[in-house]
Image (tube, rainbow, N blue to C red; front, side, top):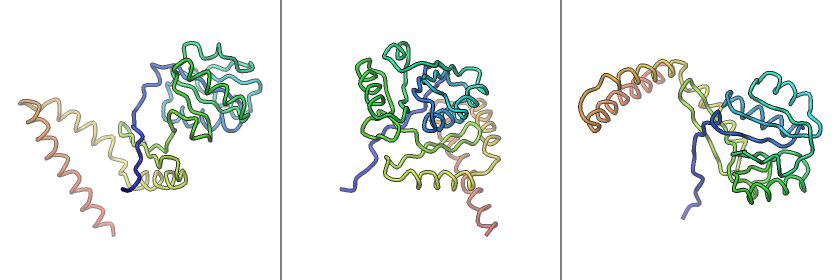
Length: 202
């Protein structure tokens, strides 16, 4: 039997949660940038002894991101829902992982798949449409390239299309099954039209 990706994808409302990133170097900056790019309203606390210029610039431009200049200790986990360990010091990252597990907090240790409850995959965003891509850690480069492909292929009109579909959905009558059937037929037409447009471009 072919191996498969057994990860379960979810979309978190980080504005309703409290996120902790431990670390202030390049890895922490990358994680912080990636997180805020996808969820600009996320509530994030960064704990580090020394913050790089990149981390400082990101924090300055995000009002709901807090910086604590301090060495990591377990008390920093209090009230946190999600933790990212990115200190670039293996022993410290391991301590964060152990502490997080003891407090039943989901944790990601940067560049250490075996110490991750979740991965931060490649993300495509077109208005309200958001797609998450995971290769289960086998090839982050492919995930990145596939994201770039989808960003190029998906039309810029998608946000308007989704809003129109939402408006149409509110006007539909009948029971749930009839509404689903009507929307299936409508979206099928949209998909076929999109395929025809792609053919004419060739």
